[in-house]
Image 1 (cartoon, rainbow, N blue to C red):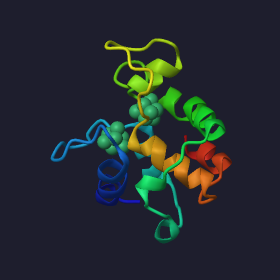
Image 2: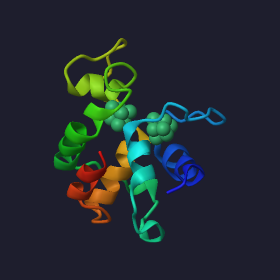
Image 3: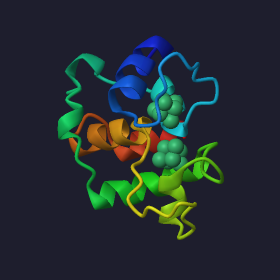
Length: 121
Ligand code: SF4
Ligand code: SF4
């Protein structure tokens, strides 16, 4: 999918880190992976309010997505908390980025198979 669609629907629509007007030059791994995927985009439910993070999907995504993300080591409170190294100030409730949440919803709703995801990571 093209970059402007992803910025509108994934960054703006799902991500608490999104800052309007800021070019996503350094993008999270979720954003990068979505750019490489072929999905039934028109059929994907974009209702961000109903995005549910299931613990099993979350654990799988953390392992295959976050660990390949440029923000994993420095720049993501969610990843820091998951590996037991919360950043200051300590929060323990940090949300994943929009790319993670969007992919999580796609997996939970059956729009994408986690194995298909593995092939582009
Ligand atoms: S972290 Fe990812 S989803 Fe969030 S604004 Fe940046 S590129 Fe977009
Ligand atoms: S939740 Fe953090 S580490 Fe995981 S893909 Fe998003 S920005 Fe990267």
